[in-house]
Image 1: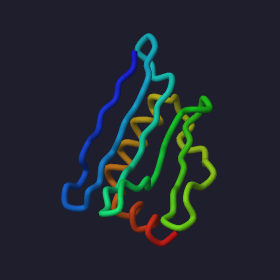
Image 2: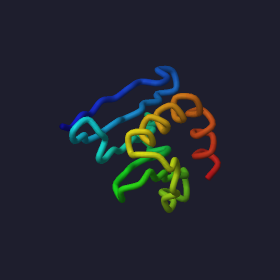
Image 3: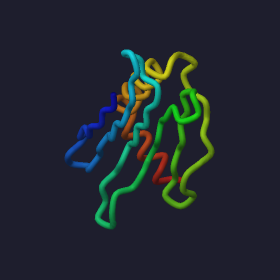
Image 4: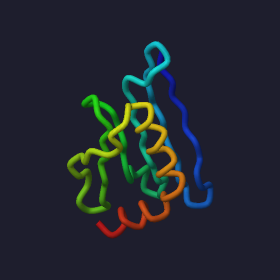
Length: 103
């Protein structure tokens, strides 16, 4: 089964969390989370967490340097990693955006 949703984290800043996941027998087998910032010149990707390689991975983005190489994060299952990433994004999106602006 697959699911997909968007969650507005901050209307004023134009911050959205996009979640896409696939489950099998109740467990997450793949996911992708994207922290997005809506700016006047389009939607910018700030950070991506995913399970595309079978482990929990995070990609930072920078305004000028673009997508960075993935870093392994959270050593639990993909479902645990996905939930941890959602919590991290919700708690730290302002700092993540500031980091993107400076890179």
